[in-house]
Image (cartoon, rainbow, N blue to C red; front, side, top):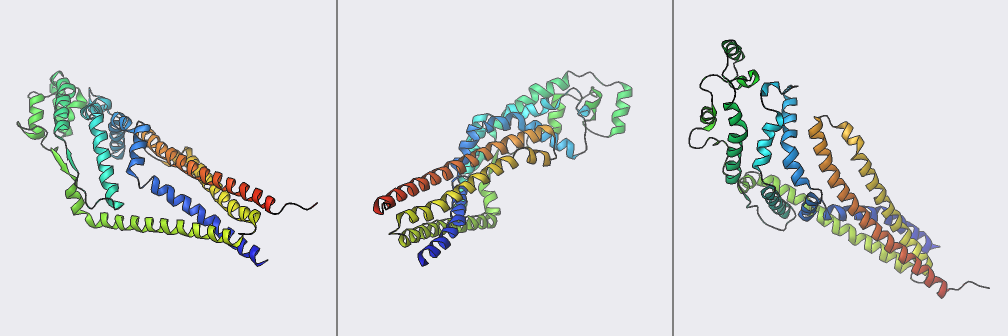
Length: 339
């Protein structure tokens, strides 16, 4: 009687403990792993999608936040023309390499695998590409615009906006590619406002206390993960010890709680999949292009996280089923039925 009561208590405790252990193990294997992010970004073709669709999405978000409902003020340019300059200036290989390096160093630091962040981002080639495509796709088109009439010039003066001539599809006398380049940044480097190098090590040093706090939280999480796994294994060991001479009971008291916890995690995964679909999309208020890109990236990561949850929980449940079946069979052989 006492054995059964103790077994029931430990079995009931084992359900939430196993549930929690499965969750924290999956968080460690996914959200705290740079390899998970890199693999997901590559499998979901996210690098290409961000480069191709990101600039247009950002353009839409900015124009919406400023209350602009049309792109008529861009004159002969479509928003795709402006965003396309950025898209063509950033090689996918460069983007992927630097994102991967930032993930390795950032997550490597917060998880305690490295002691500092010394990542430096070179923008020299990006600046050269940007300058080329601005000249080719934007300034060339401005050069081809007709000069403004007297009436158009009056309208431009009333608007008081340096780039307002675009909305009139004309250009004042003296406005050409070279003049615009000089206005942007001078003769030597027309895009001097874009740095040639970004040193994330300096950013790290300026915000080291926040990085250190994140590292401390992650360290506590990983310690809690190990402690929870140890407790789960300890409870399972106690159940085995209590029922060492009752193999069928051992199989039931160990197997059923683990199976229930695994099924619970799988159910949680299905709930996450549902919430990351239509409900999340309906709650996001932003331009369609930006929303579609965000949902695509979110869905890609959610699917990979859920996949890992399913695989881990499925394997644990399968192991529990095998253990339970084996113990019940051993129990029958040890204590064959009478008659």
